[in-house]
Length: 334
Ligand SMILES: C[S@@+](CC[C@H](N)C(=O)[O-])C[C@H]1O[C@@H](n2cnc3c(N)ncnc32)[C@H](O)[C@@H]1O
Image (cartoon, rainbow, N blue to C red; front, top):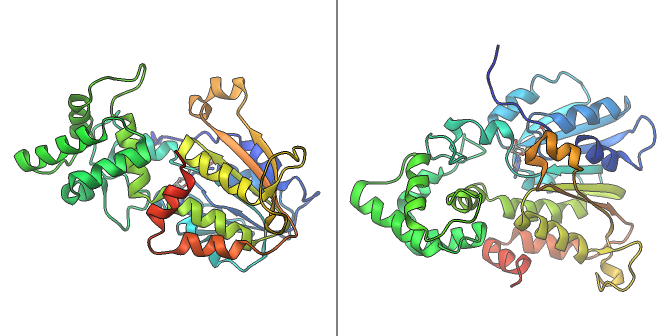
């Protein structure tokens, strides 16, 4: 029997209901699950799709890809790619896009992936273990200013400067950090106070994970691309798990939407109304009780409208080589 950690899908039915709501019985068309994970949403979508429906899934993680390869349904295909590549799909070709952001339980619960301060393991944190710098690689060369900036921007860590200095001092005295436990101990020694109920390394680990995987940049690319690839009436369903992600999704939808009920909200100019903001959904108490990881989830649902125009400026902004800082500043107002 395998003891591999499994993943409990958050808002499984509500997310798939929202995605397929306009599709009628036996939906046809092409749908995207941008975050396959262990396939919880994918399998339910496949159950609901008709014979003419197609589902394309993305994931960066080779273990997720291996799981996806076990699905033999001819309507399904998997791409080992970041969902930032969503814009490679033909314009106006998609009936819906679902994104269930962040890490899966098998990632966070596997010590050898290095995502968690709860277990000792190599300080890796890459979703895609086939490419890119690990957290240990990056911390071995980044200067204190760069480290502090990442901890501030992606972890909202008050003690970013102290932690960064401690990392550099430790590197100079005893060589680079290689293990999650080494980093967790170092942070615990560097911070002045702890937030109640929170491990002092929580924000540092979150920040490094987001940075190493370019999570917010890919999210912005994918959201911008969704305006191009969704057909009119196509649904965008995004589940986020922390405020940095949700703020990006919320502001993106607001920037491009009109709201069905609240005409007072100064959203996009009429020519830029490309989305209809439909819903913000939280897991109910029963789901949170059964799966504590659901407690921070926020699902936002929007629908592509007929309007065209502003998507190209959004694509250009997301694709700029220096987009990281500029975009970050744009979506995180003080
Ligand atoms: C929360 S899990 C998804 C769980 C999935 N909905 C399920 O029910 O099994 C997030 C997954 O998205 C993947 N992921 C995160 N960011 C990604 C990105 N930018 N591109 C592709 N995959 C990404 C992670 O590797 C992880 O497998």
